[in-house]
Image (cartoon, rainbow, N blue to C red):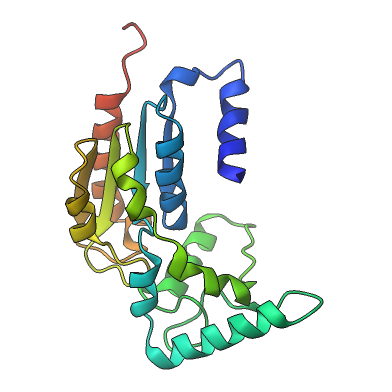
Length: 212
C-alpha cells in the first residue's frame, strides 16, 4: 500500500513525466518492486538489485540455532501486549541480529561514514520475522508485463538469489544478470561500478530519448 501510494503521488507531480517512470528497488525493496510491476503495466521499466525474492530460501540460509531463537522471539513478540518487542537488525558476525552475514555490520558502517550525521535505527520488530517465509515475490514474476532488470549476487546469503526459479518463470520481459558478490557488495566499489553499468545500460534501452 505504501509503495502504491508513493507511486501515485509521484505520478501526480506536474514536473514528473508519468509515462517515463522506471521503478528501482533493492533487497526487500526489490521484492516490493515486483508487485508494483504486476500492478502498473504503464511503467516504463523496473530494476531490482539483490532482491529478496523467496523468503523460504532466506530462512533456510540462517543457521538453525539462530533461526530457532528468531522464531521464538517472533512468537513472544506476537503474543506480548504493549510495546512491540524489538531485536537488532544488523550485528557483527556471530552476534545476534537478523543480519550478521555478508559483512552486514561493516557495510552499515561504510554507509554511515559516507553520510556524516546520518543515523540508522538498528532494530526491527521481532514478530516481523514470522512473515518472511510467506514473502515470495518470485511467484509473481510471471505476471510482470514491463521490462525488468534483475541484478543478482552469486554469494548473497542475506537474500539468496533464486536464479533457477527466475529462469523457470521464462518471462521474456525479465533480463537477469549476476555479479560475483555478496548482498552488500553492489553498494560499494569495486562492485558498484559493475552493478551501476548494467543498470544505466538498461535505462538507456527502456527510456525513450526526450526528442522521440
